[in-house]
Structure formats: structure tokens, C-alpha cells
Length: 107
Image 1 (tube, rainbow, N blue to C red):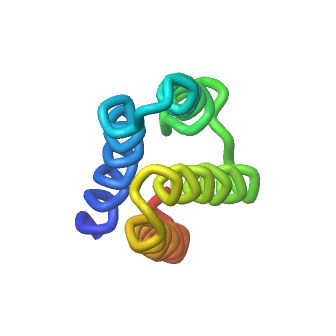
Image 2: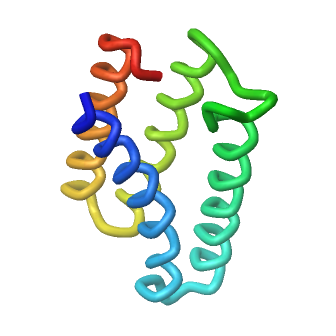
């Protein structure tokens, strides 16, 4: 059970640091700005709506759909930054983790 929660934490941290790393990797200032804004939006959205103890935390199917969309956007961003192999690995790990989180009621 702790492995699932630890993997979830690592997926969230990887998303934030992966987008920040785009500031170093990408040459275009437009892409750097886009990934910086996207990273900031994820952090603020996650802390306001997805944190377990947040006052406006989403529940049930709304949370599941939101988490799926966030992980999908992160995977698409990773595809743009690092290529399709990294994006597919991240997506498989994220979806597997999401399935086990809801299967074992750890959300």
C-alpha cells in the first residue's frame, strides 16, 4: 500500500520538476514560458482542488476525471519535451497508479 502512495508522490514531483527542466532544455522562449505557466497552474490547481485536506477538494468521479486529465496533460507535455518513450512510460505508471489508488480506496 505504501508503494502506491510513494509512487503517487514521485509522479507528482516528476511532473513539476519535469516541466521546470524544460526551462533548461528548450531553446524557444515561447515554450519555456508555456511550460513555466503550465507548471505553476498545475501546482496551484493541485493544491486548491486535489490536496486531501484542501477545503475545496474534489471527491468521487470528479476527482478521478480530473486526475486522469492532469496526468494526460503531463504526458503530452513530456512527449513535447522528452519524446514519446518518456511520455508513454510516465502515462503507464500514472494510469497504473491511479487504478490501484481507486482499487484499494487510497484516494
